[in-house]
Length: 200
Ligand code: MN
Image 1 (cartoon, rainbow, N blue to C red):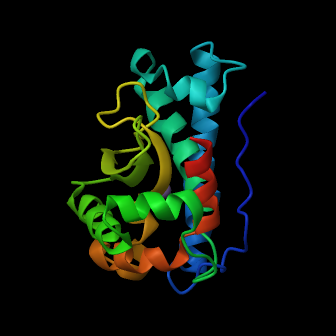
Image 2: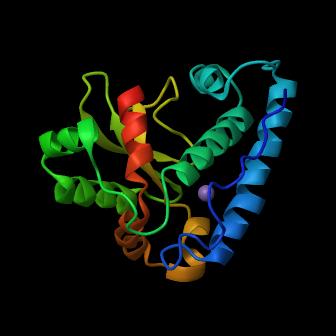
């Protein structure tokens, strides 16, 4: 079974004004589609048929850069669409809210995350992960790497993640990556983030 490009869980314009319809359309239909197609090529070339994407990421250190870049791109974007939603529709709750309080509060989490995102040189991702102790940790990865990869410097289960590739924000924010990072918090789907936290 080949990997399939997942549908967006909302309309292309549902995240406006934070993320424009034009950005969402290119990001999903062109970029995520390309990662999906090239992942399927790598699966065929490297004998990975039948493995889940999580299995592939968990053995990525032994696979090609094609599998790494496109397997990461496939998983990261599927996650990204799901942990966003229409502006202001949810708030942190339950065990995730408790973990945020233990981290030092939402303002500190936002500040650390935005710092990681702004400080990631070139393309990559900022992450909030649940680490092996059950606590929240803020980290970043280059390119399409992620914290599920067996050779990640900070391993854990992603709870939140933001794409800081220029294709994620340039049409609207131009070179203002910090402005994009600041605005992005308005469209976090806290219900989905809480589910990811609880399942880890
Ligand atoms: Mn992207």
